[in-house]
Length: 392
Ligand SMILES: Cc1ncc(COP(=O)(O)O)c(C=O)c1O
Image 1: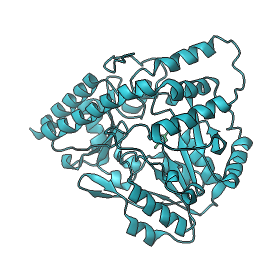
Image 2: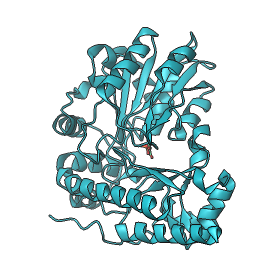
Image 3: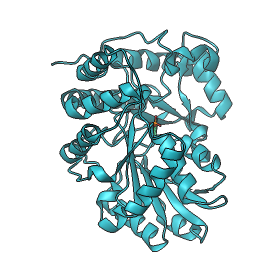
């Protein structure tokens, strides 16, 4: 089947966070929303069919995540990423972020330090602070338009209170896919200092230029035993609203403790439709994804080339993975409030404020390219016009 990613599908009135919150967030509804990380593409047909089939059965009671569920994930990881994960190691979670919160809750104490490489996906801060833990920032270095981990800074900052690394692989918002050497070096630092690794790999399937994704837990058995790998089909297949994620925890003691926390908080019971959707996505989604990735790659190239040519005041960081582009807007010489106001009021485009991703995101913004190209074209033209107006 040939998918048409140029199809414009109205999401208005579907209770979509991206569209139906525009009045509240931006004070207007005529804003092109390119912020929250879901896409404007139709999901694979097989997912829609699986949900419709299940919806026809009129009882929507508690639903089991059985061997079919974890088996579909296992086969996906093996085929797509050549990563062998046993179904036994997998635990269900109603989302990646709830899992991040519960792991921190279960495996650290108030006052302990959790490492994050900043700028980073903003809920990372919330799950640490929400648990009363301390954030240990390891700011990344921006080198040749690409983020690099500052290992020296990390080693200097680690102390006895440092218990967990909350890692983003691939990285949001930088779009970096970490290399084997980087993962080994980071992993060794964690092993040496007895630090557990929570690896958020939700963007693992979204490599745009063919670079293979390397799960940090696949580096060595020693690292696997210290790690929690969180993933889901939510970003990949545009089903974030269906809340089905998995955490792979090879170490049986860590797994038992995590499962007990999920059980105690009743987070271990999955959503009826999310369960069907995950199975269908991992069983049948390959063809759709193989068509999506070249489209996203061309969107990324289109956006980066456009900024370079028409709006050189804004530097777009070309992502290796994800449908998100990190924009360095320092050339516009506006503070964060002015920048937001400018994008909303002058350009009529709703971007994500960079400062939410940490101090290093000051004067940056994040742009979502998971939409038909004509929408991006329109948004970029509006930004160009707005920039020209301030320069007159
Ligand atoms: C790195 C990362 N982790 C987690 C999530 C959200 O995961 P979930 O909706 O499964 O909680 C996102 C969404 O943007 C993300 O970018």
